[in-house]
View 1 (cartoon, rainbow, N blue to C red):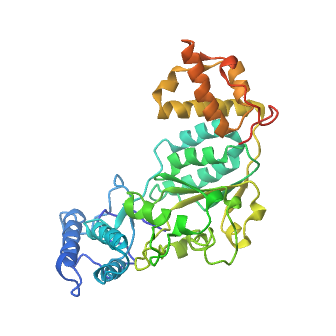
View 2: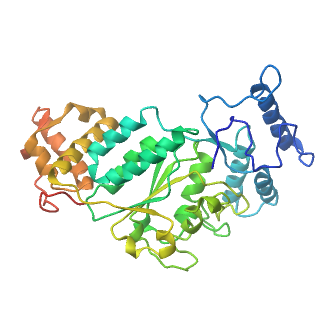
View 3: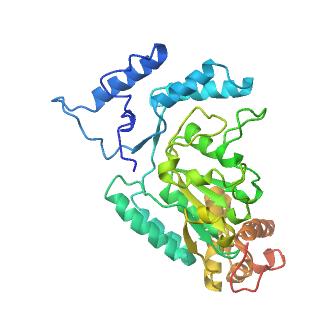
Length: 382
């Protein structure tokens, strides 16, 4: 479990570091960084009488991304000039970033003060996710007793197309996590999207996990594995798209994650919040399914589908304020509710454009394109 800590306090497991000073074996810039961190620790983490002070609750909890030993291993690889020029340049940049003061530290996003009302509002928009949100409430209540950082098991939202799984995950991420990244597993052919491609390859690149943690500011983003059951699943194959998940979905194992494009650098990826969607979870390999907390998501009824249409319009207005000017007539909302959430966004944009062309702020049914409805108006599908 990650505990709140001062921005410059090293992780407890990093036995090589302490406020007494840098390790003797380090030299040059490396030792200078350690000394600078140690001085900051002493100045800001001691009370007037010289005793240790607890971190302020106003400060964001911190997560140590890697140990100094891991940084040293990366430095040795950079010094040996391993790999092509682009790879060496990339690794040197990563090394400089990690060696900077607090370069190995990432923030952990706390739940907002109004998280309960945010969850309630989300449930009004997505009532078919009530079981998911009840689980989040229980974990949020535990988080309030500690550091305010909610710890969620990797979750799988399973159900037929049209339940709004991906849209819901993105909205939930705004409440419980520090960022959101969607990975389209239906197009994944290897594990490179998540775990990187081999350093020996000419076009070696880091995966999404490495990029988010090393180049980001927060250690607990949501990574959504969208349409996980549609990945090219080949259990046991070396380059399977789900290969990295066997490690990443286990917090204890995720603490020692290595992107294969930077195999010398071990990072702690255990704070990531994992969510996944599927239409048929039984297609998933049993070891992957066992790592996921599965929720069956039913199709919404017609009244709920209309609510989701209005929710999509509000999301569009948040991203592009011009859409806040438009209102939906009851007939237009009902017509849009016959389509899936992906189609609704596109149809809403076109419908608002049609209303604007008529110098009208109310979107009527005739403004909504007559695309073929994706199902009878008892819900909608993607």
